[in-house]
Image (cartoon, rainbow, N blue to C red; front, side):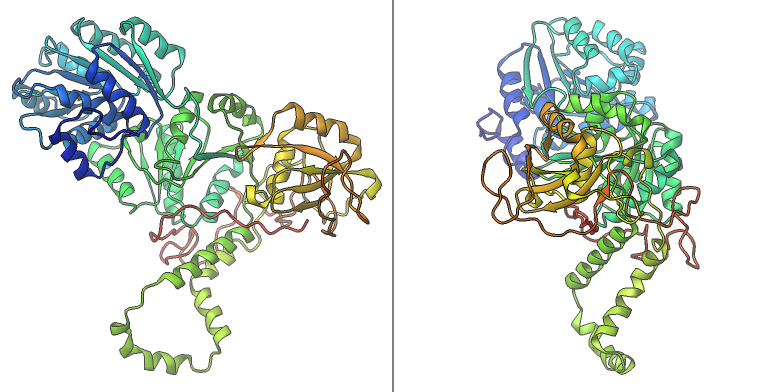
Length: 622
């Protein structure tokens, strides 16, 4: 891997990069910087969100900028004011040791007179939204006759937002001998059309495969009825105590409504959308960047200028209308070498929208059951215990109070004391989820029945086929995810499933013998993978007195009695199916909502550690 010095950057820029903590260039920087430095050829570059595109196009421009001239020499077009401000801020940081270099962001919603005043003082680099840029050109305040570089950043999103006419007007008044750099996370036909119309014999570079998702992100989906969509969203947040997430919505109204509900229920949340003033948007983004907020509810457009590297989750409250937008959304997590999870909440009718996205990102969605109240309580309790273990005790301050504390608690033994202290913060969760209903959509779950307690007729061993599958605990497989994997193959409805045995590197499961051929055909024909590993399924036999699985190969461990069989489709969770408007009862507390007046209550996700998310340990009877 090259260093920034080896890429040909001067000492002032290198010093700024060192000050900012930049050590080695990313793939797109390593490819783009030398190309722009050494050639005037136009450039078409593919790079996902969060891969360092701003440095990739701005550093070589800063290397060549004429600081002695006040003419506008570079203009960077961006789809949103937030992204324009972010880019301008980054370039200012990169150029802080370059005397005389000025950068200005121009965008709607701010005083155009102030922007004109700054332009008249001489600015070499302009970062602008298409609309405001056209306005300044029409007013003859932005002069581009000496322009050397035109950069189209997030070109796909600018077209999605309907800026084609503005792009045409801007490109028409720029010099023909300029160098045009087009950067995009996806390359739909409209972007290819822009490239064909305005780029001259461009060289193409790519950091990753076009339109594909990052390997660091796993993709999950939860199937619910429409009425339970919001309740499922809350459970996903509650089962992940360390969640640091953006929830994406399709409209401004939906964004504000979801944020208002979550705030009312005690979650540490705010909304980000186009109806906010610039001051409000800046405030919300700063709170989210500093992790004062744990969850941000946002529209696609408003989130464009938000640059954070350690999101644990991206949640699609509803899937976007443009499937390419899913790539932008999911690309917000799994950055800087960290793993991330992209979640889609869908109804049965919306499931068909997942397949085009799977083809686009080159990955399969994992069917995931909506967490039960028991799972949520377990995860929250484990998080509480972690906090107790990690708390730093101020010995000096607390010592004076210890004698009276000991006196008050002297009649409680160790076990009782632990129970009571845990209950202080945990009782609200227990009360809220005491009789939590199953929110999984019954039509979706009918494919694989997980309920063993409904008195259904059970099949004898001779009516079941036992299968070997080459994934296990080390692949993060559990019974629920195995059932979801079987469901995804669409073998048939109402297949009865027998015993499941999850071992370290492989597993066994039983299905109705009637569907033996269909099961094998489904797994062989669908080219199935799980967590990036190719899945292999074989018919085996229940091992008795040294018998091995049919079809040859080494013998697999003997079967253990795992309890009664299940029918694929219903859930063994939440037999109490009381329904409320959003699928979950309101908690029985004196202060309403999720008890946001007391840290640790459901919905009040405290700002503590923001590490990687724990995978819920789902305890189910098999």
